[in-house]
Image (tube, rainbow, N blue to C red; front, side, top):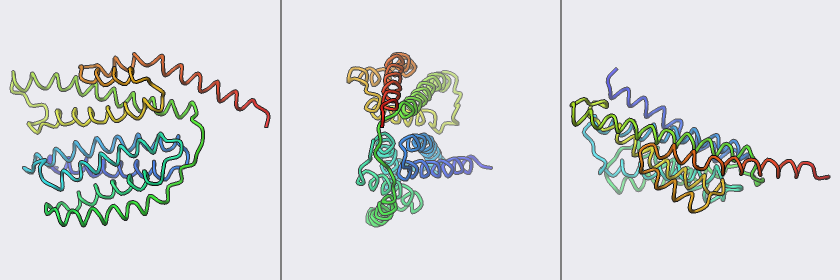
Length: 264
C-alpha cells in the first residue's frame, strides 16, 4: 500500500468519526452523551486535517486551492459549533442548523474537489441546506449541569491539552534532527509541524469551551492561552487548574445530593 493510500484511509476513517461525532452532539438529548460525542468529533477532526494535509503534500497541491480552504474552514466551524452544542444546557436551533450545515459543506466540498468558486458556492449552499434540515431532528433537552457533565468536559480538555503538549515534544525532537542530522521523521511532508498546529487550534477551542462550562476566571483562561506557547506548558496548566476543577466537581456533587434530598 502506497503512502498516499495509507493517508487516504486515515482521512476517510477520520471524516467518518468527525461526522459521527458532530451528529452525536446534534441528536443526543442528554448533555453527557453530547459531550461523549464531542470526543469522537475531536479525534476525527485532527485525523482529517492531518490526513488531508499529507495527501495534499504527496499530490503537489497547495492550501491556496479554494476547495481546500473551504473544507478547512467548514470543518473547523463544525467542530467549534459541536463544542457549543456539547456544553450548552439547551442549544439553540440555529446553532444546530449551522453545525449540521457546516459539516455537510465540508464533506461535500471534499468529495467535489472543484476549484471553480461558482460551482463551489452552489455545492456549499445545497449541502448547507441539507445539513440544516437534518439537524432539525436534534433532541437536546434542558437540564441542570451535573458533576458527570463537568467531569466529561474536564477529561476532554485534559486529553486535548496532553496531546498538544506531546506534539510540542515531538516537534522539538524532529526539528533538530531535520536541520542538524538531515533525518526527516515525517518523510519531508511537514506532517509533524502541521499536526502540532492542528492540535494548537483544537487546544484553544477546548480552552474556550471548557473554561465557560467549568467556571474558570478570565485570569485562568489567559494563563492557559499563554502556556500553550511554551513547550509542555499545557501539562503545567492542567496541574494549575486541577484544584479548581476538583472544587467545582465537589460543589456540584454536594448541590446534586442536596437537591435529591429535598422532599417532592
